[in-house]
Length: 325
Image (cartoon, rainbow, N blue to C red; front, side, top):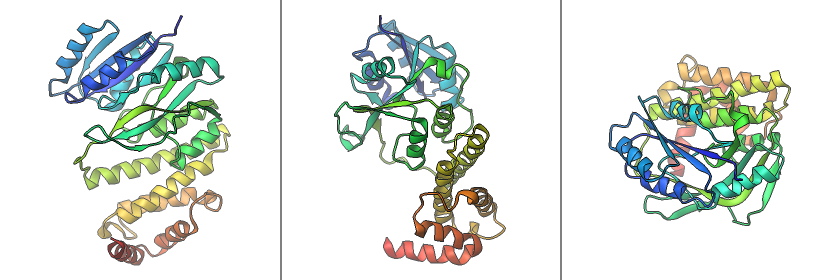
């Protein structure tokens, strides 16, 4: 008998996309599923649609809760999930028909607790704008250290949404409410347990990229700083566990420190600004791994100069960016 798969879908004001998402789940070739729709305090008609969808398919369960954010919604789904396997899908995205089946087969066939498909990027009109798969259906088993290096270097997906997890792996794990870039942190901590991951060359997850959504600069800076903080915390966790992945997380932190220093406004780049002091503190925390990280020589040089001459370096970088644009 097929093992039960729980698919957790956080929903917040997604009335225009939820139907397509759920249709893709109900239509999976793998039938032994439960779909947990977590209405996270939506202010549109998403909650009503969740209830209507549940009436049409007995495999759909609905949670209505006050708004707590993505991590809170996922945790609410985890708390009631009955499945042997757990998957997460964002409510504006959708799966291809064989996605759950291919991942479940991998977990049953190979010695691993995580299976991962690749994704297509879809525009608002439904066109594929980018694909990460050759659709060969070949399976590659990666060691945890290999996958950690891949996500730190942005070569492999850090999302939890294109993956299927053995429930035992998540038994005592929850997403940290309030933490940005929660997928990277959550997945990295799981992988630090030394788990293998099955990577399937199949475009099973469709990530819908919405046009015209502009994130505020303040939120961008907060997200970057949180990403840097996550990587630095993971360095310390790696050291305690003796996993020897510190250099990979140092790469991630240093690369994002470089980005932060480039995009911060000039008035925030000085020796006394809060943002610069944050960047400097994290730079020196990563300094023991500076020679080993796989950053370009030009990026390493830029970081060093920024640390000693922040204002003048920022002035030159901005001038060069304006010329190149």
